[in-house]
Length: 145
Image 1 (cartoon, one colour):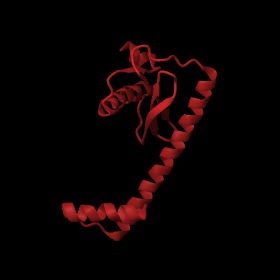
Image 2 (cartoon, rainbow, N blue to C red):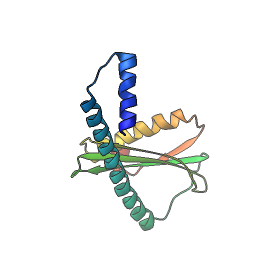
Image 3 (tube, rainbow, N blue to C red):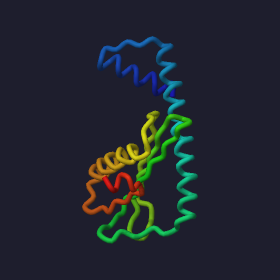
């Protein structure tokens, strides 16, 4: 992380004439490392919940109108003041195609995070240039709005 931080700040210096003290570069690297560790912890918590949900409801329904299906979900951790979301693409047999996840130190209501996930997922899907995608979410409050 320190090497990356030095490289990052070197580019800021070269391209934006931004001079940063060495102690600030180390502080930036430590903060970035801590954020990365926190995102892994949040991802693992989401993964545990996903495993439990998958066991409880082992009924994935294949896409009826496209080669891939996009499922997305969000998680809010009040204790950590954090949100995490996961977007998963699977083919019509249920095999994993591609995934996307994000973590943020943001406090939001669960239905608001679900709304953000929809926006992020649709932007990500657009960047993949897929022809047909079936999307699915599980937040009734968002679905009804």
